[in-house]
Length: 304
Image (cartoon, rainbow, N blue to C red):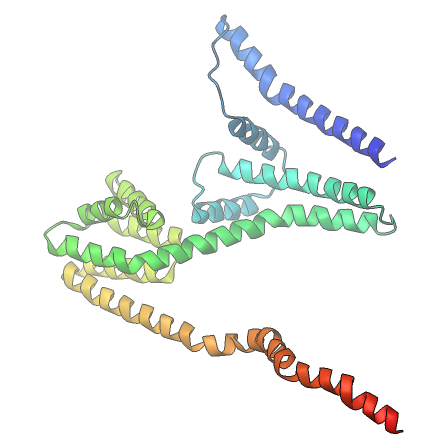
């Protein structure tokens, strides 16, 4: 029975994939060839690209409110996904996982021979996991990228100070720092490159800098942006302002490191209590317990 269900499920999934492939890929391709009046030579495509196209098409059918789409788009930007179809691909992934997770849960329970009393609840939980899982993964990617930007910011600020003190303007200094950090800190390099492109395409410097702070979502970056905007507005020395802010940022990073070091003792309490102390008890008290069980208890029972 389980083998028959597996075969039927495999046929159903393959038929569904064949239908979507014919509907979303083969038929539009044939229409384009008929309109052009010639059979074009299609270039070889990687299978992952075709799968991404299917996810994008599937994302078009996912109903979402404009507010949710705007928030998801901002989170995708913050995670570094800035292509045109990133939002549709993300929605397609959510829809696909919402459909596949209950199917996987049903197949697992069928193969393991578990009872079907709570099968509906398990499928609902699997569907919720498939729908909410991509959001949690996206949040993790956003947090990891912001941590990398925050870690790279002191070094990037020091390089910016050197460029400004050597005679470069702020626009040229940002462009130079973006080039220099491309290999070591690609996240910060991409943010600075986007800021430089916005300024080159006509946006005001203050607006481009504010967009830099909002895109990154890092508090230290927002403080740096505020310092640059104020220095540019009031005409103060940009190099001196950057050097002062660099010293402040180094002091803040040192204080954060000291704070993390001070928390180590508290964090080690539970690993020591649950992992190290039981081993010590086994090593120190174990031989005594064994000797009591092998010698003292038989001696007491024999005397009694």
